[in-house]
Length: 81
Image 1: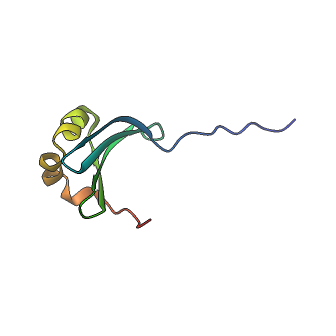
Image 2 (image 1 turned 90 degrees about the vertical axis):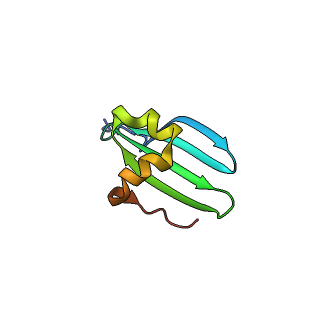
Image 3 (image 1 turned 120 degrees about the vertical axis):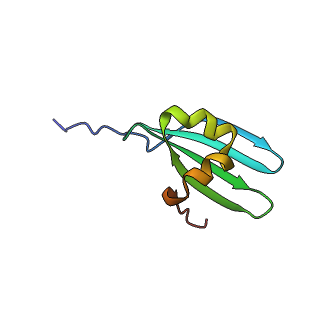
């Protein structure tokens, strides 16, 4: 009998919105119960990703640049596609 492998998604999308050429997506990770915000700027084709405490996730989703200024030390670089 083969041992079954548990496949866990690395992150799940909780919410997404687009405004003024900026796409903001909120993710949750079941691996560590962490939340991250991903911001894509279509004008520059650049993406930034940063961790946020779960209790501030919605605030960061709606106001990512305000939260980003408080999270600059925790930026996660995103590889070019």
